[in-house]
Image 1 (cartoon, one colour):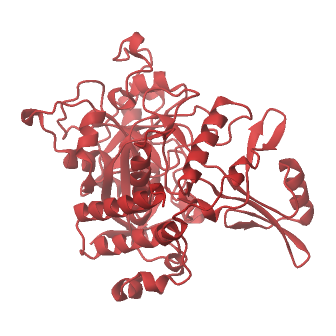
Image 2: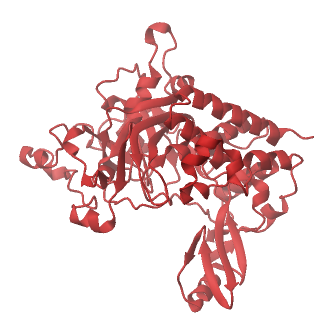
Image 3: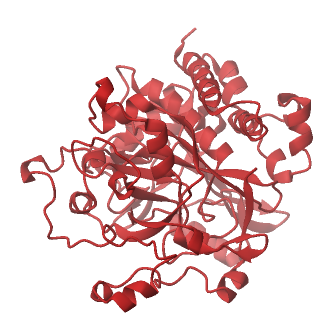
Length: 493
């Protein structure tokens, strides 16, 4: 049975000290002072040897190979040097009873260039649960167990890296974990762990806009299913993108209780370490190669019945009162503020937009022609987005990307089958068995999940929680669903 936690509200966080300080990470000048270092330790097991290294240390790779070696095969310092952005130091707590749900072992062996002989065989399931079984110190400080702060002395802490705007993911090094013996050929074996809590200096907020710091199992299943679909699509000869390798999902043996939801299991999703846009710009500059690349990818997705777009801004007249909405949030602002916003963003009144949300990364080194997709939770069927696309940043203000994307939204020949697998439904009860529906019917937060893929993910989550499917059976169910979706998306009747 998982331990059940809740997130402190802001008043509780302030009363308990919160996580919005840097008190747990020593400054450079304090590193050699034993008394000051001891003040930052947790349970006398805080290893600082890998948390801080001088940037002048050897990279571990030849200069001529920079930009060609995969991020997975670097060490922390080489990653910093190759990334062109400041990856901040952070601290994570090791969750000793974490357990791998499923693992893609062959993908791990390939990403880390490991020997394939039997003598050098690696237990990838163990590898995944050790590196992926972590939660940030900042997150743990702001969780309550039975209404009380967690006793942090129970946990061993290790160093990690946080690239800019990493809200709930961190870079971990395999070699930081003494219990692992992985025959790495290069570097420290860097992995990207999603769902491991907010970074140092942040306080988790109990909502679903990536501010809570965690990854629920049903969210991870949905994202891994989309990843599996897009992985199959990327192997088409005409496809303009590839996808970042995802290695598996780890059960943290923790459940989180939030408003309108029952306690739901938390997990992490372990991916290959990679590089992002140094500015993490979702809206590239008008006329830039990166904007052209994102448009090319979105066009290809829509031609195959999918889209990356998410709900953008909506301005409408509500019984004589102008309203402004972004995603599902309606802002409490005056009519004058709504009109000013519309002018600044070049939006009409009324208007409704969708934003292209193609997130790109690179396994070796970020560049303007990087084309590796990452972050797949939001991908849906294309015919559900019929509004004008959202805006792109230019030097002199905001401009529309244009309606070229909208014009591509011609009906897919298999649109009815796509809707059956990836569409939205009006009566969710018919998609669950009796036991599943009796579990979720009293929770509005679950009943509001009306997309087929959301329902599929909740069904698998229920089966896993109550012992009806083991981890590898979850993986097989995901792959079967992804295979069916891929066949429908790419078949032209």
